[in-house]
Length: 568
Image (tube, rainbow, N blue to C red):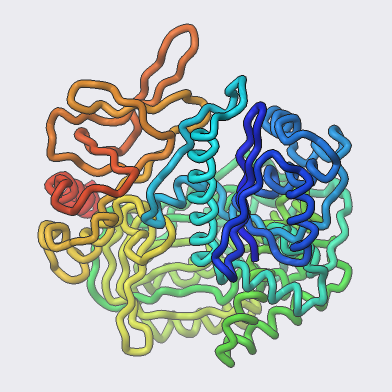
């Protein structure tokens, strides 16, 4: 594989290639012949980039059609549909095998990823609209910046290795062209399933399945919402189930007791592969799929792979199963079938309403989610009977995990201890605690650790925070959006221009202020960046040590989050 990145100016262009097998770099500057030779020599290799499908790949193809990179870039910067550049500029398609690591990870720039991966956050200081050729010193700086970006993309490739391997496995399993590697998960899924786009006009018609049996008049109002006349996406209804207000609307079902803390036996009841199961049992697959048996075969093969411990096949097939529903709502995907998307979403809500209606007299409801519920059982025998009847009638399978403790701030934030075959497992959800399990994103993760450890282990936040030696657990990665022009840091009473993406810590220096984003027009508008400490220190070059930051800020924030769990 080759990782690559372009930088383009009015009178100069530069591109860096990094062969990850040899860890060597090739820099090409203003030389289209050298570029063509390099691409032709490596045309069978996989080229990896970040946002390259909508930028770098098109720039590269433009070179082969003798289009100046600045011309192509100008078009791309001023066009919402990047792919129209091929037709508008008469760029011929280039058989470049590429994968875009930005796909399926929306809302994160490469600079943010650099921050989350604990790399220095570097932005080029040379303006891209410079109306002259670059000096030798400026070219040297841009190359340094280019190398840093390809190194960051390489590191991200390691992080997303499973994502890439799953796509490669699908391509091999279904004998597809390697060119499919460039597609999004949804695009690849449509190809695997052989979907062919069709236009229909029945999106607003919902057909209820005959396995749903809802009897209470107040609950049948939900049926009326979905079955009386055409679907109206703006309509919703609220009803109380098990003492908790539930809102039924076209998007999902979520409800929970606020500020609820409980220790004792609870049952976490989930439907096994809920949406894929409905797609199979009720034939809610996209009608654009011609072979209706293929999805079911993929489901069975995935179950077998999981039993055998074949993670590669399991993850590859899981990608197809879990992506299919979302693709039915995507207008530009071959699986697009909004009626089936509504059938799945609405039927899922009604199936759970059906189950909750039967269980309500025999349990205390704690929370309801799109594919599961959490209850405190009062009559286990009766609940088991109801579950078995519901499974038989609806042809859905339920899995029950025993939950021992829960700390629930609201429907979107909770900590749960689940008993998994005799071993305790901590499950977290929400912006307050979800980073307890490590992942790519790391935004003041120390707070998540402190809050969860306080509730589950009885460790005081000051102990967790003061004993932490990893400075990156304390970082805030901030990003200034495109609607703003510049970002400034208030340092010792002076506003210093900083990056659009910055690594920030709480500062011990009370003369340090927050970060401001500037919108420059007829007047200058200054807005502070939300959720930052009142006293900030910017450290994009990773020069600080753990002793340089103010841990007292994080301790106060941890206690604030804890209080939000316990008091309304």
